[in-house]
Image (cartoon, rainbow, N blue to C red; front, side, top):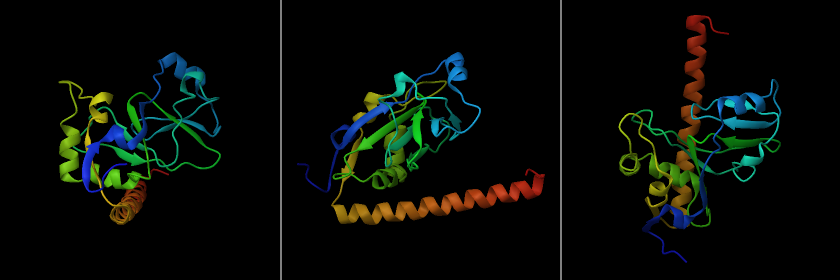
Length: 188
């Protein structure tokens, strides 16, 4: 059992950490559906592509509710970190440009981890793991060794709840900005 209020390697508090599935252009074209099938491939941009079926090579890489998803490629000063929220009849997989973390939520809550990784200290620790000159990538093994705090359950719940509130406000703001752009530029 892990002691609370200390830092441990991410892999010690995770059930599994994996990258998504690599698709060639032709493979993706073959799997892409022209209608919503409930099976989606998630890209780093957040775009979801509807697939005809779940590829065999992705059967062990299905994203579950509460999985923490991180962009492998460093696109800006902000890392893209999200917690999966999936509908009952929906199946999600990701491209290999995303890393999926399935936490042992009896030890670390997903929204608590997201909150930590979005703090200045958490961002710095995560940024330090990226390697590469032209396109900085986050190595899977480096992420597994990232030290994360393990706090008592009540404190984690409070922090996670605040993070969920922040995410709701961000999503609401994003929708309002989209509405404004639509009005400004006539995009309907």
